[in-house]
Image (cartoon, rainbow, N blue to C red):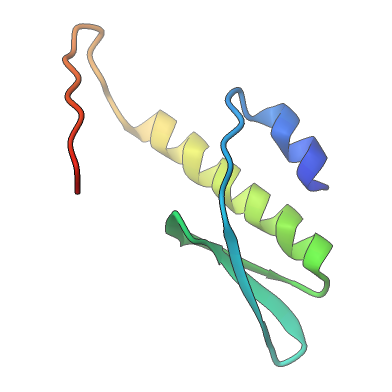
Length: 79
């Protein structure tokens, strides 16, 4: 799967920074803004596709396991 195909699966396109490095011949990387989304690939293109899949799985899992009531409040905070 290419990064272009991944965008079609996600309703809202967000820009992330892919931090990557070479490890024993593999490209290994993570999303800088979401360090728990990590993957690897034999090529940089494969790494991008795998990161996209990992992000999509994380989003789907969060959506399935989180209950948010219809009536809710929002507050902007700085961390």
